[in-house]
Length: 454
Image 1 (cartoon, one colour):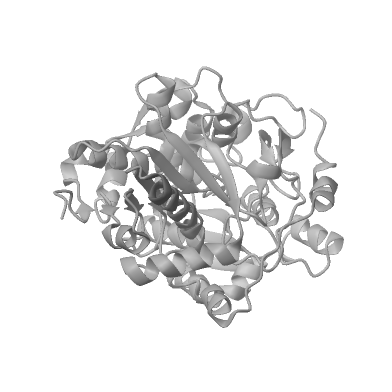
Image 2 (image 1 turned 90 degrees about the vertical axis):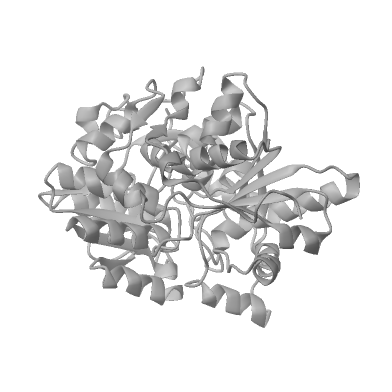
């Protein structure tokens, strides 16, 4: 047995006290967010009616490399952080690979995922501003679960618009949110103007994150004392999630391990961006080099098949425009898509890093994802979230390549959370009824043909 333990734990005093802002080290910054009315770069004043003021400042700050984590947030983090970096000895043995596989496990909290890292930060700033509550969207439900926990902790009202097919497929995640006091509405709903419009335009739609975002923004801006918060995509979210990568870097250095390949699932970019940010920073500063792979579903392939262009961040076209890899704001994933990672676009930061060639991207089909998830669960003892399992699939692929070449690479991936509320998807896989759907070029061209002219 190697001297490297199964689980590398950090001491409490090794937990980050600052978030890392990778934009500060990027020579070519992500393109500015544009106002939907004027198409001019937004200001903090433009964002204040939608976001908490401090979060608006963080969103637009691309020069400050480190931002202090308030003590109240660090105290909350201590309930479940630092999270372990686990050596997947059993998976290595199963694959008979010379590669060393490590995963950063973010499921050791009641929300079951990494999303709590940003949820508690956003709830804190809302409480500090004296707000009554917040509104949000959620796809598979991990973000909504995390935010409902955070709002309960700070005594804030929480209104969640949940993608309709997930609302129906994941009733227990919905009930966890309600247990923490959140109001959960399937989206698109008939409760908002934009929801009614989307339902009229797409009768019987199963929804998308873009739809739910539009509804949540409308709900926030039409209720006094409310603001909108988002669980992925935004630069402020990647900033908060940098605690994942900072802890991973510290844990690796503790045992003198140099990562060769770093892998994360990619939907909107929150967990991937959080995991890779400190490592990308080293690359940008010329201190190290890594192979970084973003893994997305073949049914929602924004990086691998989308366009790098300005697009609306929501289906209702009420939010600002961001330059990102996008499939078009009207794109709605197939109803057979079993997990999260349902967003039509990608974080501006991740998009710019991909465009510069600093990271790679792969798309994978969901039956292969669940095959990898099942293999992992049987040998590592954790039932992984479908989202995380995209990273597991490619980590296994990379480890098998090492088996062929004899290379003993260090492979690190993000295990963003657990899949215990995703049993309908696992049931479909186990019953053999799960199918793969890959949109055609013609379908994607239809959605991308309506990209705004900027």
